Length: 322
Image 1 (spheres, helix red, strand yellow):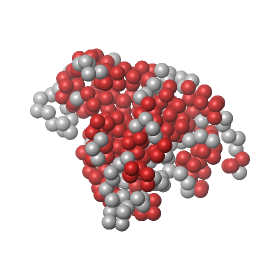
Image 2 (tube, one colour; image 1 turned 180 degrees about the vertical axis):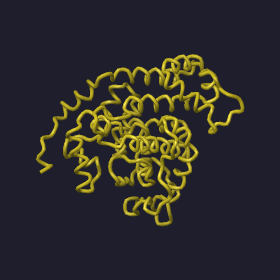
Image 3 (cartoon, rainbow, N blue to C red; image 1 turned 90 degrees about the vertical axis):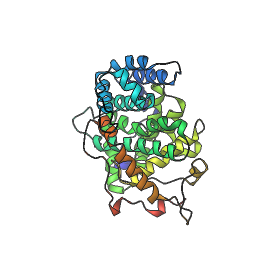
Image 4 (cartoon, helix red, strand yellow; image 1 turned 120 degrees about the vertical axis):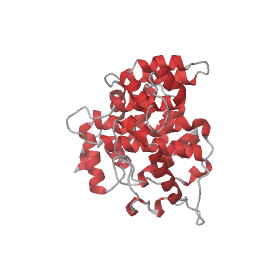
């Protein structure tokens, strides 16, 4: 029986996470970009110099700046000009997205466990939804941070899939056979879940504490201490993105919504005192259409990345009672 499979010792899993080949490459880029953008004395020139060290990032930023999404009348041919017209936050969002996705874009073994295209569509969708929720409910100071937190909230799934392939295949089989959340299957097999593994990785990358916390607690946001509103935003954005069928997070279910989130987020409610999911579903679908160019450039594709307005896309009311 699957339940009798040997489980992985948590400390061994931590060591595997911390010794991933080439892991220092990503944190260097991420940390430097955050450092430059968070420094009020930084200039477009200094950020431009960093961007130019990455040919893929340079190409994608110039492509975005010259896209119909922005509609600038004259071609933008230099990174310094692109930084000026797009702004630091957009450059950071695009830079972090491209760096992280390129580092973990696909399985390093021949047989992929996760559908990586759909997985990253879901991840970017949660980023877009998180930024939308932050803007919609007055958290403008953390809009950019909300995007990044949403984007990398499930990074632990990639680590488990790529570096514990055999055991993770058991998780996915359990999800299919028992119709349970991937989170629950991970805890049965590993005695730890992707949120915890993602947190270990974030600490290894020296990401800000608020980002690390939002990764670790996006399924249990009520315990957040550093920036609880960020964990609450990602928690609801994940639920919203799954309900809208944007990409695939590894299982078809919508995670439970925690009522206490309403103490952090002034979400819109119906007359029955439930979260107005129809309002948010329409909003996030519109947001995905607006951000389509940005998303496709990040993912290196052009096709739409979200589900249509199908009746099956609507969430079950029982899971979204406020």
